[in-house]
Each structure stands twice: as C-alpha cells, then as structure tokens.
Length: 200
Image (cartoon, rainbow, N blue to C red):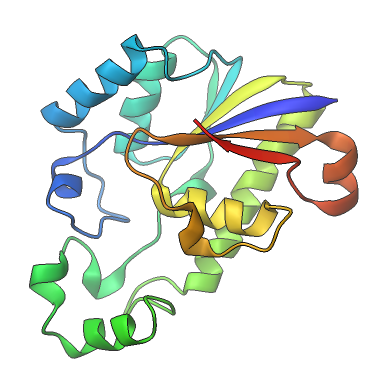
C-alpha cells in the first residue's frame, strides 16, 4: 500500500523574523507569520489529509489548527525541535563574537550545541517520532497525512530516510514550506526508506 506523508514546517514567529535559534522556546506565531500562512492556505498550497501528527510546541499547534482545523490529530513529543543550549533565543549578531559559536562555525555548523541537546540524540529522537507516526499510518491504512513540525525535525527525518546519501543541511526549508513523501509499505518494511521525496 502507498501512503502520502506531507512534512510541513510551521509558520513564522517573531523570533524567526529576527533569525534567532529557536528550539525549546515555546513561541507563538506572529501576525506577519499568520498572514503569510493564510496566503499559502488560500492558494491551495497544502493538500487535504485524513490525519495529522504534530509537535507539542505552540507554533506547530497553531499552524496545524489553521491548515487542518477539524482533521483528527495526535501530538508526538519526539517531533519537537532541538534544544540549542546557549544559542537558544540568540541570533548571529549576538553570538558571532563568542568562542563557543566560532568553534561551532569552524566545525562546519556541525556537532553539539553547548549546554544543549546532543545532535545525534536529537536526530535519533526525531527518527523515533517519525517511526511512531509511520507505524500508525500503516496500521490504520491512512493514505494521506501530514506532520506539522519544525525545520530541524524535517531535516533530521529526511537525512535518515532518503534512499540516496544525503546531508542534514540539504533539506533546509523556509517557514510554511514542506515536502511530499511517498512511503510504500513493502520498501519501508524491507529498507526503512522512503520511495520518493518532492518539495511542495
């Protein structure tokens, strides 16, 4: 059986406009972000679905409610964004002169966030959350569903389940954007890989 899974990044918060690292900070959508999301909705950007999985954080909950109000949904805590540690709620201008940030930049923006979540632990957590959703999708024979989540969460999922070799940063996307995934149960059960990934 084939399943269509749409990964959608939440709309913008004020801190997104300020280019801050926002992970565990539970920001709400700002007016400009809501306006942008409404335009995407009215243009038919988001496909209809039968079920939604969502991060527990407010910005994702609000985005889900605007796009898929009335559609059954389930919160998956493992799909929350990364804890950015001392980078949390800070932007480049605020961090650029700190030793910790320079070390992170010099390492190719890879590695762990100081006093934050281990990056490999974060990726494993996102994978566990995605597989929890997939298990339900297959068991309930859900043909079309959406995950309304975070940019980092989407990147972690696609890095792991793309059938080609891919890099975490290859999957970066803007707020309100997303990907359509095709999951074929036979391939998934055999390889734990997605059949197709297309930008929405």
